[in-house]
Amino acid sequence: MAGNHKKDHVFTVNVFEIKKEKMKHVIIGNGIAGISVAETIRKSRSGDEIIMIGNESVPSYWRANLTKYILGSTPEEKMRVKPEGWLEKNEIHPITGEVRQINSEAGNIIYQTGDREDTLEFDRLCVATGASPIMLKIPGHNLPEVLTYRSLQDANYLKSRLRDIKRMVVIGGGVLGLEVVEITVKSGIHCTIFQLGSKIGLPLVDDQAAEILLRRVTGRDGTHEQGAEVMFDVQAKEFLELNGHVQGIRLKDDSFVPCDMVVICIGIAANPQLFENSGLSFECGLVVDAHQQTSVPGIYGAGDCVIYPNESGQMVPTRTWVTSRIQGKTAGFNMCDIPCLLFDEGPMYNASYLFDMFYTVMGEFNAVGEEYQSYSSQPDECSYRKIIFKNDRVVGAMMLGNRNGDQAIRRLIAQNVEIVAEADKKSLLDPAFDPNDLATQGVEYIMY
Ligand SMILES: Cc1cc2nc3c(=O)[nH]c(=O)nc-3n(C[C@H](O)[C@H](O)[C@H](O)COP(=O)(O)OP(=O)(O)OC[C@H]3O[C@@H](n4cnc5c(N)ncnc54)[C@H](O)[C@@H]3O)c2cc1C
Image 1: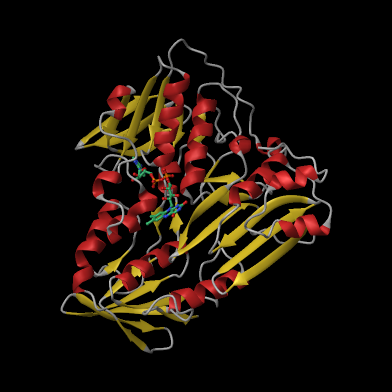
Image 2: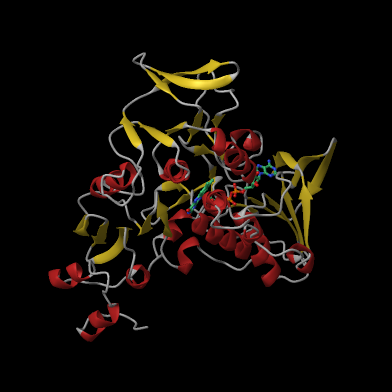
């Protein structure tokens, strides 16, 4: 079954025996991971105390929908993750504050709220602090039109400035960068993307899918009147200023690209300072095992702040909404002494849009190596599908343009179904593929 490899990635199998009548759970961060932790604990242990500390002064919101919010397709009232009154109803005590220090050994955290510093003891702790955008710290990065994009506040600022903008540069043509490109192009603003290397959309697409995406983003596939311009392998040296505002970018080769706004989307990183002297293992993220437990028993991590063992056993960052939510749930169960592993719900899955193309990735979607075998098809200019096998079992898939049938493939991965015949393997490339047909041909598959 999917997930049987995960037991190799467990620090300690829940040896933190407290089993108090009533436990005190502290959650740092009220994004989707933190909310999911709180919800799971409340459903599992009705009498426990739950305290959730977040440093944004707004209720938890759909961060992954910020672009739709800017574009107006998700109205403000639909941005709340939970309805008004949900925290009170579930007896989850919120604190608006900034956690400054985690003391694993002492079992407490220190946080700042207003101008007061307080200490909070915990029986169980979950760190769900997300990550922050990486700033390109070259001269001029403090100018008011040189932005990053992560929070509702960033989105409101970007939205409020769009009407003044004529030329935008987006640095980084990954998933987030392409969201900004979409906002820009749809607002009728000239857009240039700077991308290192020769592909956009990485790491969610492979080379072939990147070409399809490039044609869409530049408008070359004919679906949009206006597309963006993509400049490959360029590096910014300086943001140039005129009267306190950005007027363009000087490149490393000394050429000049005019613009009146820049959005930097070159990646995100968890805040290492929070983990200094905490006793918790931190590499490029807070290290957790397949139970979402950190190197210290009783302390868990979930969401974009962690690195975790993926399906191939590599330590990877989270970076997606659904995985953050499932990690929160996994952490929540384990915090209540209900053993649970990350992939118990099924393989990693992420579905959204790249620019305005549907995409789905799941499982080991970007696995490479001799042990993997992949089949792909490109039925038309605007869609692509790849299925990855290992030892005759589907382990991952990538779909761009058309994601029909993705749940069928996901079930095959979850059931660890063996598919030997070449024709059967290729049949998975058909968006209308039905795994129940495999079952009727003698493949061992639990029908739905
Ligand atoms: C514009 C945008 C679009 C996206 N689109 C998609 C998409 O289409 N699909 C997808 O799967 N993913 C998408 N993502 C990624 C997805 O939103 C994240 O993976 C997910 O929100 C991570 O949730 P989290 O709870 O780990 O972190 P966050 O949502 O960042 O929540 C962490 C919270 O903790 C707070 N915090 C941090 N440090 C402290 C501290 N010391 N004390 C107190 N509080 C603290 C933070 O301010 C924040 O409020 C998108 C992200 C962005 C920014």
